[in-house]
Image 1 (tube, one colour):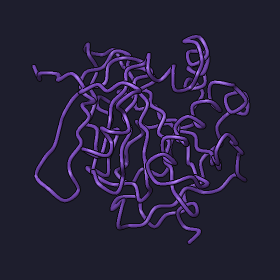
Image 2 (tube, one colour; image 1 turned 180 degrees about the vertical axis):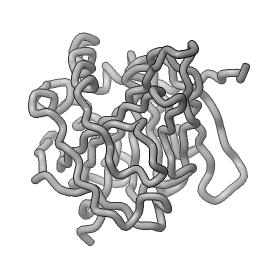
Image 3 (cartoon, rainbow, N blue to C red; image 1 turned 90 degrees about the vertical axis):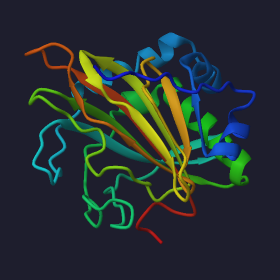
Length: 247
């Protein structure tokens, strides 16, 4: 049995200091609620939308374990505006498996986007980005992921340890159901140091400076034989200047 290491939790008072010092911070759900300025029911109301994610048909490893939706936003100060729907694109420099492809996914459900908790979460994270790198518009790509174990194993990051080619990344654990594995690993992009831990608490959050650290999540397996499970996450990437591919 593989040991599970608890995450090195921060709180809202020192989260930005932790990001400056080590390139990332982990917040428990209570601090995420404070960031989004919503009650727990507000975030939990978003969870049902993960049950209606279309299958990701772009996986180059031949897997059928990932479902997702994708939408884009511009966050500037208190303003959160949805951008026109667009394909997701990454350079091969950042995604050796799926880079160079224009991947057009179904958009995030409009009811989810209209939820106050959704807007407040993007706004709060955008304020963190501006506090760290200066007030400016942030070009945000929102990815809803479900990784399942119907075929025995699911890979949250089939591309391996990577950077995303943006300024900041927020990985929110929405929930784990009937699985084992899914350990988070964060490494210095230029250095020997790394940390491993497992996010278990729904709506806990890993916030990364993508220019300084590399990250991955290990594969998941069913916790019980012949009983498929899944892991749901919300990944939000924040980039200055433009969406990837526009510049």
